[in-house]
Image (cartoon, rainbow, N blue to C red):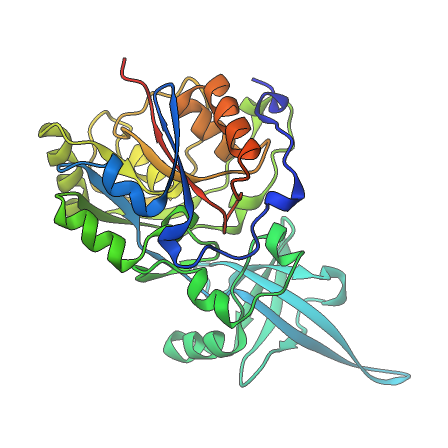
Length: 351
């Protein structure tokens, strides 16, 4: 498989910089086998049925983007440099792995001053990632980060506009619970409480799993032979309860439908032995055409970047040629793409 096999041309005008309001008014492309239909996310009640189980990622996005100043005394007097920080994940030694911009403006041992009482010292740089030790911990750190930080919008939005107060709500699911993600499980952003209530009333069931989405989800694939790509690892957990619920749904003939590629990757990780079990750890599962799905019957997902690992995942589920046909239809009909864009319900043909 070559990277070019997962490429397509996307007009810039179709990259969404704001979500639909209300959430469930976003458009929904339904690909049921060979049939493509145009609908709205609020119409999911027409496509799902009693006994189906939606698997939802309950990670909470932290305001991981910080702007601060590094101060130095020089022969010419005091100077300051602006440092942009994107937190990636906490480390076992108490530091945070982070991306700094510009990295060359900060040396080990130097401090960055953020808003309020928050500051951090650079301890070392490993593999292009800075390891920062903050002056606060626990609830004090969480409160200071909430005050000083901004939501970590993906590059294709951040390059067009800065994050603002609206993103504190827009870039968070209505069921977000466990803090730790630095990117949202974006397919889930389309669900509001009204839609969840209507789905529950018709007999659709829900299970919650946790996968802390990392910034690596936006990293480009740099090798032409996609089998040589090293997938980024993300921490996740499938509880015993969630595993039992999912297994029961399959046993009763219901469909298991993850909402988002993060939930899909997590449950397939937990079912690598053929049956889903409780699981916790770092997953770097890389799903490409030829993958055998153990648990997933269908998928709710957004429209993904060309030449990305997520294009490979949906191609594995539906078939590459079919996905390219689906995306051609979406572009021709002005669907909005990426994190704040429209959604799709992908239902593979029964074999």
